[in-house]
Length: 118
Image 1: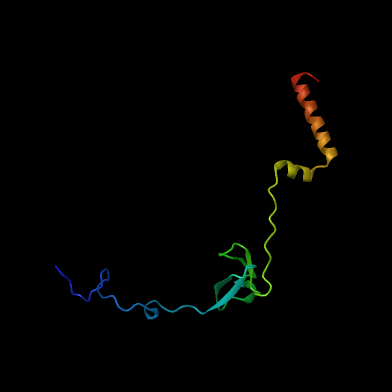
Image 2: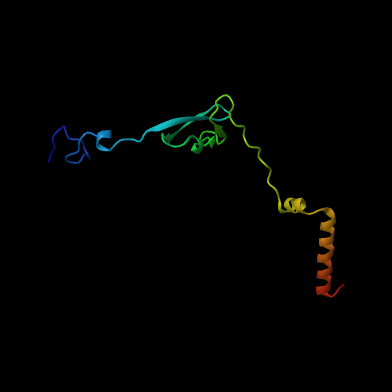
C-alpha cells in the first residue's frame, strides 16, 4: 500500500514543528573562552547566575590536552612532566645513606640469625 508523497518516513502522526516553543526555554548562560599555549580556543558555557568565583580559571583543553586559561595573551604554561620514579628513587628520598646502611646491616643480621650462620 503506497502512502502519500508528502509523508516523511519515520515521522509520527501528529508531529508538529520542532523548536524551542515545544521544548521549553533555555536558561540564560554566558560563554567563557579559554586559550591554551598553542592558541587553541575552547568555549565553555555557564549559567548566567553562577558567581564569578565558581567559574574555573583554567581547564584542560580538549584539543591539545594542555591547560587553558581565560587570558588570551597570557595562557598557562604546560605542566612540567616529572619522569617516572622507581621504588628505589622514592626510598632514597626518605632515607639517608647512613640509615640505609644501618637497615641493611640489621636485615642481614636477622637473616643470618634465622639461618644459623651468624
